[in-house]
Length: 323
Image (cartoon, rainbow, N blue to C red):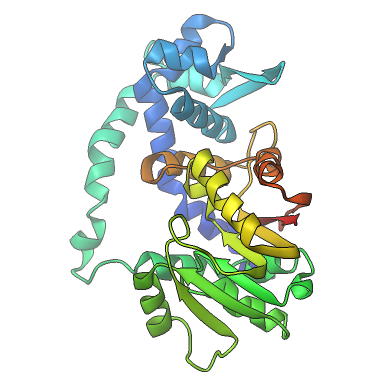
């Protein structure tokens, strides 16, 4: 039987979920020659220097190196706020091509052959319909910590809530459960809201309403509180600022914005789940994971004040900014 801690927050299952991210991070660093370069240099190198030597993008390399630090494959030192990386003894011994104990060729076989084959494991075991949709995925993920993030601050001060990009409505439903005086408007694309109303939100949940729209292109409704859960991290800094500017203008005086996000440590030393997700953003979308200070700068730039960051100790955390 699992412990009560496992049942409250299944940390082991989250680790298993990210297993392929861990493998591919290690494989990619090997294939690009990160460990070989650092072994040859004999001195720590910055991400910019490594990217230049290996012909990669500066942003992508920085995220890859950060994730490798979290995985204990690299070590990092900060000098004048710039990170300098070096191999761990483990990486020099087993992940460099020139080492007599090198596992480099095995890693490449797993990366280039085995990894691709395992993509079809489900079909090999049984034939079934496609995997559950993204909305089902996000809905189940929020079950792990929705109460935690919505009770980090007293949200009863904000009776009129707008959940921008609310998807399946998991946070909206938890919000009205925790705060009986609140009403929530879920703002999302028409197709998303159709699925949400059909599969996730009961018609008798009368304190939840819906507004269709594209929050980048269309107007957003006036509210006391705007919840943006895993929204800002999806986009470039420019788009994030544009959206937050719209939120600030629509927000009622005395209102607030609540960002629900994974957070990187200020020195980017971890946590490894956030480092891996930042790397994941490089593959899937336009954005990346941010540090608390970076979110603070974004919110301050558009006018929000009294910005507070609080953590849950789980996957997601919350940043509150007041107007």
